Image 1 (cartoon, rainbow, N blue to C red):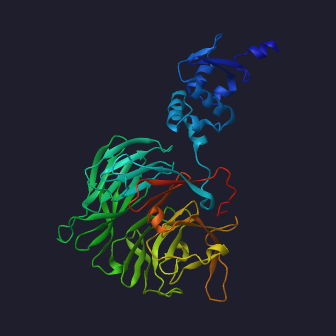
Image 2: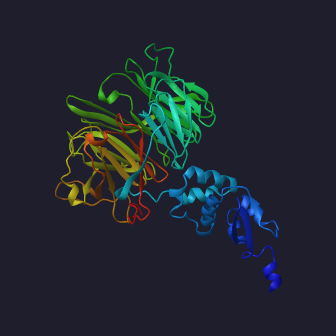
Image 3: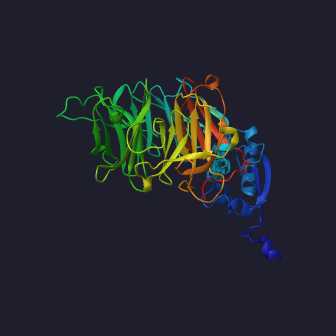
Length: 475
């Protein structure tokens, strides 16, 4: 038995450490749980009769040791130390992945989400646009700069571009941004890890003098290509396919001319991973209300595979209530629209599109059925199989309450002759438009929801409570 206890590879063997003059005692298994490439695992393999000395902060080490023991941060840790302080020490010890995992927000459920922070760039702090990463990181464009925040939402750096203002930004690789401006022509590529400009792409046509000074309106990314909508001063517009490996235009999906609603430049472009299709939508608002189109292209054939114009095309059970915004759930190939007059939400399965594929949401929350809609600017965003809608400064979420069935589940409604899907609508944030400003953009990333408002400094960060009991809207 004595020989077993003295064995240096026994998981329960005790190891003493002296960190910055403070003594700690732990086990071999705890230190090795940091991972084979970590400093702590390497130190645990050293046979030492005296405590191993590490010249670092003992208070932060205490937090990281607790993390290794319980796989969670002590409740008081983030009150005592910033996440940046913890991250720097975690990187030194080689346990940054454990810290990141423990620091991630709870799964995002819009019903119980709340503002946990507002990220404000140091200068020109009113954002023009932003991009959220899958890891919860954030790129904020303000003026001609891009401020970069890591997955802990700690400020990393700012990159100054050659543009006066950035109005479109897209992540084409983890550290590579494609940006465009409504005041300058071309799509421009920047390596944000080095701050280096790497190239530009312009829409030109030597045979058509009307194609000049083409500005970027929307950008979408796929593994091999970037899809960009361009608009010229004389209203010629197009959607180009750009090869990511060469930064050359590989094809032109569409070219349109004129100021009619059905010919305006797509303000949103989305690539659908399941089918490889590209979805573009445009919305205009004039004296007679909203109008616009949704168009779906197959980049391989360059053909339009489906389209709808509102008002005016196809059979519609809501004629006269044109959409004010469109969103795409790329995980399940589902299309959403928000109606401009009623504020109702409708859904269409992209795999089953027809003349009138829309199914209108039946709200199962009695308190929301009489919710008023002021008819101002509306923004719709799909994230984590939920639909977030910004209306009149307030934020709503639509979610299914049972775990069975996806968005395509339908039930007949014999009274009005259309199918409906029963979802629950709740306020994430009920504010009057003047209290915090009109919502301009909504985007999700890393179990967070990011929201910007008109003429308001900073980006709101929304997360769910750690004690959320709300179930996912998908099975």
